[in-house]
Image (cartoon, rainbow, N blue to C red; front, top):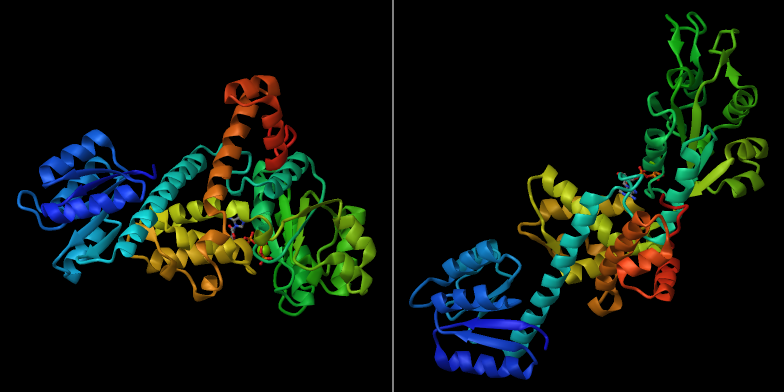
Amino acid sequence: MRGRLVIIDDDRAFREVLEAVLLDEDYEVLVAPDGTEGLRLVAEKHPELVLLDLRMPDIEGLEVLRRIKTSTPEVAVVMMTAFGSIKTAVDSIRQGAFDFLTKPFDLEELKNTISNALTLRKLSQENQALRTILKQQTLDFPEITGLGPRIQQVFSLMKRVSQHDVTVLLTGESGTGKELVARALHRQGIRSEGPFVAVNCAALSESLLETELFGHEKGSFTGATGTRLGRFELAKGGTLFLDEVGDMSALMQAKLLRVLQEGEFERVGGNRPIATDIRLVVATNKDLPSEVAARRFREDLYYRLNVVAIFLPPLRERREDIPLLVTRFLAEFGLRYQRPVETVAPEALARLCAYHWPGNVRELKHCIEQAVLLGDGPVLMPEHLPFELAAGVSLSDTPSEALGLEAVEAQHILGVLKQCRWNRNQASEMLGLHRNTLREKIRRFGLGPDLMV
Ligand SMILES: Nc1ncnc2c1ncn2[C@@H]1O[C@H](COP(=O)(O)OP(=O)(O)OP(=O)(O)O)[C@@H](O)[C@H]1O
Ligand SMILES: [Mg+2]
């Protein structure tokens, strides 16, 4: 049985044809001749979907739709009418109908519409589950969304280093979350009471970068009318984040190396050494080993910076996180723009999951922001997505539903394991899973006690 449907239509012959066709398609079918009876069936039998005639003798179709959506919003409603007026179609979609069929309609069209509506309904429920996860996310780094094994590895490293002053080198393509991780390390670390100071080393010329980092003494150069503190001093007691460190000039590389070796620096034009009191986090989207090989980056500085390296994998290598990221950004932008989007149409989610995301999470985030702004209803549709995403994707290519479910499952298992303090016997009992099955799932989701304590 593929689902329970209710047909509400006053035209008896039509009702019977539909009933026969849908029974044949392996649906359970209930029928009602008017709105009153239809509403009763919906309330008592909890169908997944309602086929609703717009024009009926007792209660108007739109009113029936409104009542169904108020009492049981999870039920998908497909409207039918012989009077195809654009206005009523738009009205019913606004009121939450999934789709609109104009009589006479093709039976293939009917079957497709029903099966799409049911898939969407399922996804929407999963989306609810994902949202609950996001709300309860008591993870260590709640600002960073992700449940897959690749991002868990990142969390694991972050946890190991956050409580120490070791220098951290963040690498990864543009938009993978390096700055986000740098801030999270600071917020969770021992220096969280101190400031977080970021400098983009690629944005400034050599001499500007030097005074920016180390400050200058009054009169040290024309225009230096007062003493100015550099970022090393401003970050005192906190974290200094040097972004795009791979773009530093040879001279600045030499100066930075000296500061790291000696633990002190001087302001430009000054000679009083000032001790550094910072935790250093640096980031680059360059491949530093090859920069070193090409003699564009000092090898000795590379080793100083590369005490602990955290690599942020590109989004296309951790597609399992896409549904959760989409859910998070939808919630975020829905709120910001006062445009609540409840769910993502299956075709749209399939495209989001299949795209290669050269701009990584940043690109996904912008894409969802745009879709929220372009959208006009509770469902994010494929046409709200940028054109590039459409190429060569079909719904069956992508295990989008499985992805969503796996994320839910992984999160649940993780929660139970934590609760049992990683006692697997106890956890497998609580989960109702055989121990071997649990072990397999732990392995597949990349869960481990050192990841999440
Ligand atoms: N795992 C994540 N969860 C939620 N938001 C994320 C995640 N990863 C990245 N983002 C968001 O994506 C955007 C880009 O992230 P960020 O600026 O940290 O990337 P980056 O690696 O520093 O990129 P670049 O190399 O271009 O500077 C930010 O808005 C960030 O909040
Ligand atoms: Mg950045």
